[in-house]
Image 1 (tube, each protein chain N blue to C red):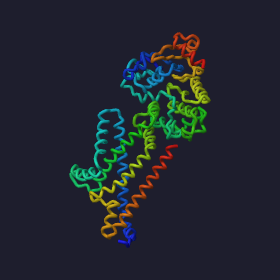
Image 2 (tube, chains in turn yellow, red):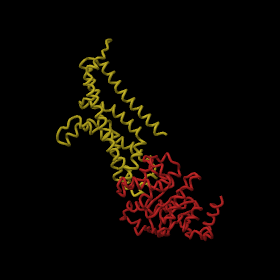
Image 3 (cartoon, each protein chain N blue to C red):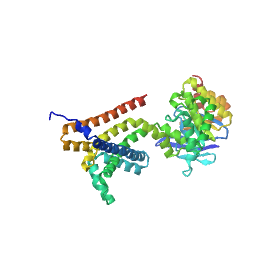
Image 4 (cartoon, rainbow over the protein chains, first blue to last red):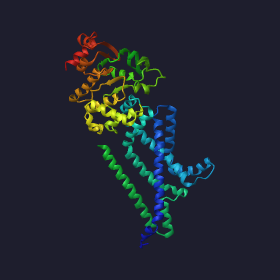
Length: 218
Length: 242
């Protein structure tokens, strides 16, 4: 075991990058979908229309009470059942991530919207802007600005959580690294490398969060 | 143009407004004053439906504000409002602040809205500040931008809710001057303010409120000369002699 051979990384780089691409693709699509649905959930909860607010609250509390891995399993078996045909690991996992993340994002966005002064809404309404104009042009741009650091933190967690897709046999970065590790019997090298890659991207993300917080603090 | 008839409003058990009746004619300037908590800000916000009310009626240019069938959004686009804390949109430049509702609400072409914004900025003496953001302006400048933003909608009347209360003393006059010019041009105005000098110079009528009621509603000269109610006299003696 003393002869570490890190050339295994270079030799398999295209394969590993492909896996990393899957990790990033899942992360980005889950963020985009999660933000879209999360925003609607937040607006529903703040709508003042009790039935809508209750449905949104129930959704949020439901998904936040389940382990992510359970949701992934669940959709892996559920989505094909609903559609009546297999959809493949990628789409079922993507749906699971989006719906799961939406619950967390909605809480962040709700706090962000609440942080916008009520006078801003009054000013927009006084100018004759309707609900969607007020939200789209005045409230949400300010809310998203205020919550960017928290959203980015959530994105970092999501980036790590995508490694859970191994349970449905999807080849993300960690699975690719593991395949190489087992095939070439280079477990220490490959898992060290994988850890380093996750570490670098997450540290970069954390650094961006700190920078943004400093910028918004002034 | 603005008619309030027995307007009443409650927050739960708390009666904020009781039977408030008054009128503002076209081109008239009416100042609303009174101690804090007397309901004057609430009253002015009922005029464009920002504050709902339970009793009485308000009509603006013949449109019933309290009627559930009234398109409040459309009505508000025709009534300008200026707030105590300016409420400029901080993520937009000055010129964008004045453009946004023209484009989104009035559907004006972008170029026309831009020209209008620049012309109004010139008019309030801020032609040089178009590309700045609100946070880069003084309070007095921000409030003048807010007035320009309201004027960009070509309002039939303007509501001012304590427009100078959040300003440092040296900036109050630059805002009052703009308002005085507006009044001179014949704008219909309802102004909640403690600036009695402005009221004396500019207002046609003064309304005095206390505990949610309109206690006095008089011609300006009469109000400052011989107010009929004791409470208005007491208020004036306090506010004019400090």
